[in-house]
Structure formats: C-alpha cells, structure tokens
Amino acid sequence: MSDAVLYAVDAGVATITLNRPDSMNAADASVKTGLEAALQQAGEDDAVRAIVLTGSGRAFCVGQDLRELLPLYTNPSPELGEIVAAFNRCAVALAGMPKPTVAAVNGAAAGAGASFAFACDFRFMSADATFSTAFTKIGLVPDTGASWTLPRLVGYAKALEILTLAEPVSAAEAERLGLVTRVVPATDVLTEATAFAARLAAGPTRAYALTKRALVYGQTASLADALALEAELQAEAGRTADHRGAVEAFLRKEPPTFEGS
Image (tube, rainbow, N blue to C red; front, side, top):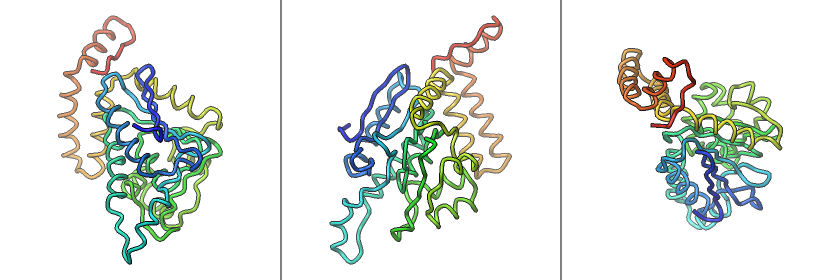
C-alpha cells in the first residue's frame, strides 16, 4: 500500500480509499499498485467480510491519469500494455472478490473510475455524483471490464448508448436504470455504504460468494448447466458451519449468527 490508497478495517469491513484528491483520484501507477495490493489483502484476510471502495475529496476516481500516458506518445503507436494490464488486475480482483464489495461513489466516476464502480457488487451514489465512461471522448474503447460489467447491469442497448456517447449519467438516471443500489445525500454516501457493508459483513460470507458465482455462470449457461452448478454449490454451502448454525438457530427460534465460515 502507499499514501495513494488508504486501507482500514473495522468490524469486518475493509475500507479502501483512493487518495489523490488534488487529482480527483486519477489513477496513476501508485493508485493501481495500491488498489491491487489492498484488494489482495482484503481478500486474504479472514477478518474482512465486506469491502467498501471510495475516493477522498470531491471525486470517486476520474480514471487514468493522462499525464502518465504522455511519454508513450513519443512513438507512432503508443503501447498501453502494462497500463491496461494493471487496470485489468484490479478489475479481476474486484469482480472476483469472494466477499461483497460496495462502491461508495462520492463524486465523479469517469473512465476506469466508473469501471471500478461497475465491477463492485453494490453501488451507493452521492446525489450530485456522475458516471462518465469518457473513453470514446479521447478516441479509446472501454476498458477495466466496462464492456463486460455494464451490459450485465443495464442491458446491451443502454450499455452501448452509455459507452458510445460517453455522456455523464446522473445519479437520478443511474438509479432509474438500476445501475446503483441507492442514491443518498453527498454527506451520507460513505456512512450509508459502510452501514450496508457492515450488514453484509454480518451475513453468510461463503453463501454470498457462491451466489455471485452462480449468477455469473448463469449469464451464459444453459438452464440445465445452471441447475447442475446450483446443485454443486448448494452442496458446498450445506457443508458450511454458517448453514448448520443457522438451521440450529431456526429450530431454537433464534436469529442466526454467521461467522463467515
């Protein structure tokens, strides 16, 4: 981790904060490296059972720091390989995280910054925040997984419109599209997102991870194959201590306590 990405854990919730407020949290190498390290740490820490991703200052993340690209343009065909690879590692870590992830979108989320939010499981958005995919405005194509996540969130036609026109999507429009879990006042977005994450952190962590795996698989599988995976995952969930404890609590007519195992 570096000063560009802050990491804190409280009551089972890891809060990861992109911390370049003077640059609206534009992602330079330090942000990408720090975010990847923070996600790895959160994923490996059994004490962490939910994750909140947010930005410091007035923005969530405005995407790639374009100043980092300038040296590449001394060549006729700039090579973006490692820059793209770094973003991709973060996208895979977010989308594949076996614990619930919540984006607290406290301000502008543009380009790869919007993609980071799309890769999270849930999004809480400040009422004055915006999503802007921005890629085509600088002659590029979507990256950091936006071409995969956004159609799954809003459908192909709307995703094509958002990614092609690259016009800002307001919080109200994002809520109408089902792109966000909840829109809240700017002063409350991190508090609300953290409270939601704490609720998830108190739940059956393994069941959440298996549910997400089933949903991702079901997007492209046949019904027969989806049913087969459900049966496999149900058997796995049925062997967890959380399931056994919840059944015992039910029989005692008590609320269950989940330990995440």
